[in-house]
Length: 278
Image 1 (cartoon, rainbow, N blue to C red):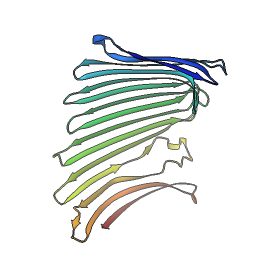
Image 2: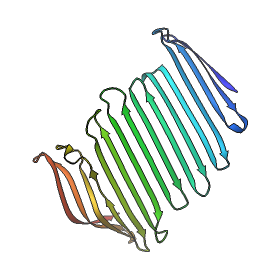
Image 3: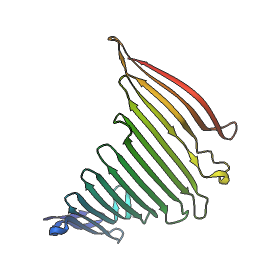
Image 4: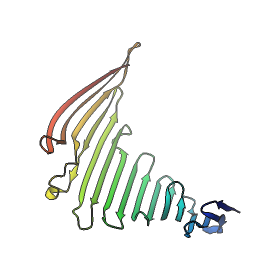
């Protein structure tokens, strides 16, 4: 089964395409899309192709592949010339796992992109990882990459949970330039008791620039070293609901001060009590 496309455009001409669905018995099933347009106003020959295929490797595991090539004029975005592909492997049982890889080649924008992700989860725990890698294929040859790792699990009871996260980023303005690297770890232990909930939170910002960027003022942040928070149960007074939150911690603040023309690095202890009546 399939579809036939026929377009008659006043300025661009006649476009013809087809979408077909297929099955390869035990080797999966998918669809194939082809479209061609000979532009009468520019003389260019446009093509769009798409293929999507999936196969069940076993009752718990599914593999899917998608590919798209487009060299055509689109309205209203304009001309595009790109190739994109995506590969996904999914497993679902007591443990759920997912792996995904994608790539984009943008020939007009002269940009390439790669993404990679992996996740694993059970009833109570989960782990996620992602990688992004973007780069320019023409001058200036910039590069931007980032990674994130997140993990969640209960600790000594289901009422107490651990959440950890690490973010890493690296960017280069041009070929041969010094890289701008940053690492941001995060950790939180949170629990719930009968009459209150509590949390211990710590996060940090580390820049590996050192003295390589003498005037690097964009890295402004506040670190919790750590912070303790307690939130009592909301009090229902009949005519008034009273909620509160108490936090105490040591904080490191890096903030740009115009009068200094540089970042100020300052650490201090702080206590904060919040009361809300509704």
